[in-house]
Length: 415
Image (cartoon, rainbow, N blue to C red; front, side, top):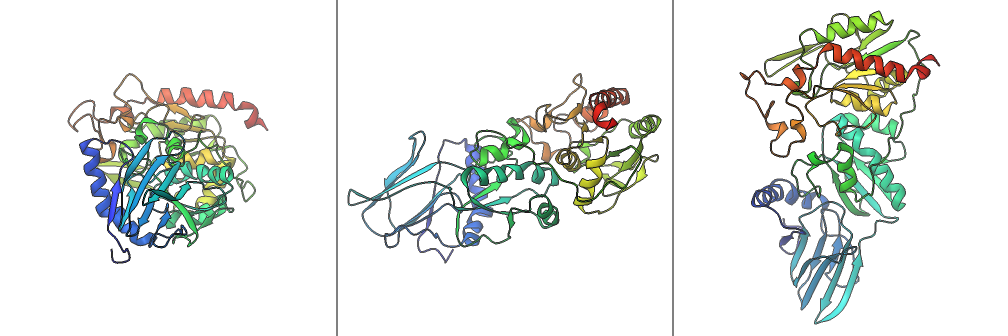
């Protein structure tokens, strides 16, 4: 990394297992070392020649030649993370999440510089690492809350395919691919499957939205920011939206002909049933998921803002642990979620969850396994228990929750 005058020395703020240390070394090699180049040289002036400080890739402190001693601590607890002589080096924290840093620099035994991390009024850049729609929708309210809490100037970077929708949903937030020159600190929003760089706890142990809370150092989960429909309702009849697909087949509902039965039931109740998946048919891991024959075909690569408008006027949405469920939640549409693979507390609390607690379930949030690496972490394909968390949700269970949802929202539906 030729742009840096000195070698980089990473320091941790907590004790990690051997496995975590190996993961962090790998992440530094394939991601964070490259990110230093992307962020550029350490930018923050301290008033001391050659001594520079910023928080663009964790804490970064450039120490020039001299008789320097550096102490780095937690301003709230007083916990000391680094307390050593240092010269001709760039000190970088392993952790990239919010820490109330307190930095002291001594030269020849005399304190010459101190700084307490303070984002108030500063430019803060937030990158959403995930490519998933649900993750992006779940995390961004925390960015908005951070801006309000600290009167900070927020810029965000999301995947290109979500930018148009995010501009509609959050017009007050600046979007930029490159980190602005005046950026004080950078944070990365991730779910965090045992990623100690990004988040102070394993993201599988906490609700999904809490990941952003932990990363940004907030006291509570950010509230939902409601979607405001841009257009008037275009479908006069009562209708329900459904989404039968998700980012992986392990999340799909696999009761034989289950969707067909539910679509027929909804029609008996007087609803039009609109399938709003992107694709009509998807096959993966030997499993094919297709639009129910009785549903109306509203599939296609339609702008998310139009999807959100349609959901805002729907009586309710029936889907999975997927991005469309999060979009419906954002739109203020009651969500019936068919999901046994994740813990009951993981998604948003307003959800009408349908799951079978009498079979294997919740592997997504089990820190002993890695859901993303194996379609069914507990069972092999030949096992009768294979994917039973999604196979053993009976249509009768779904109908029961539909009835409860309709009853609880009866007053709203009559308006």
